[in-house]
Image (cartoon, rainbow, N blue to C red; front, side, top):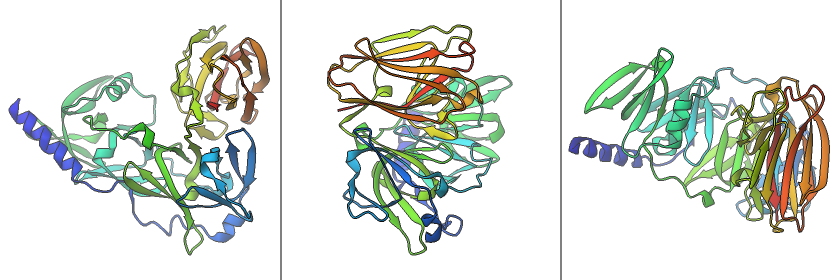
Length: 418
């Protein structure tokens, strides 16, 4: 036991010697974007806290949080906005099908999709949609290989990390076997781990995932922005600047903890801005839940996921936050007359593959405030509803045609605004 304690301390000390997280390695040629292409982009969309929409091409964001639109004489304060939707025309048209080979779970709740992962000298080398990234082992919570359904054993380990050792989830035919030890290195072919004071090597193909020993996580108050990339990766941190280099490419600088990350702007899909005036509903517990499917299998509502446990997606766009439900459902939240508006983006989840027809309804203290029929083929719809003086807000999804087949409904970016 004494030996294991000493080794654990050594592993922890070694991790904290690594300085700098998310060091972006070159690849400027691959991600070069001429200024002429920027001029051809469709307008970006800025969503105000009051639900109003502003359209224009985002040109820059300075360190003081002032956002400038191309051709505009006045700047906009970032903290006066709820969300930025970045034009799809700015995105790469080619995406590697291998980018979902491995998912890197970051401390603070973010995650990165990667084509590959290599661990050496206490840093993970990743190949992501943003280019090659180097991530300190101290800023990684877990690694999972494969793009299929997340196994329950992995989810349970992720939710309750061990304070003293890393956990290796190994494939044993159809089962998952857990081994405790310390990760030393990994590449495409193998994992090297320390078990009971000895180094052992196993084939990478036998590993389902690794959940690293628990370390101190960043204060949630330090996370001000949720940045979604084109492949669904989520970066949770604080936006610093958006600047243009001499070649015309725009670069987004983000602070994750105390460390910088530099991302090509064209891989950014959206940015959710966390404000003291905004309360995300996925961070609240409903005071009442009613779920009454007609013929579909019963599935409970999910936070920041659809009812299948997958990322929220309407059409080809993924969302970092929101509520996933199945018709018929009624979620009741306590507003207690403290908020002015309810805002969300609604639609049928893309997992239905074109099926689904239902009605989204919002009630305030029993009075209907909003009703919209939505089909799976409809685009996402932004809603902004006054809830001044309302004590209880109910979000209902009612079945439409074809009973409740495919009625997986998403209340994306659902929030109360003061």
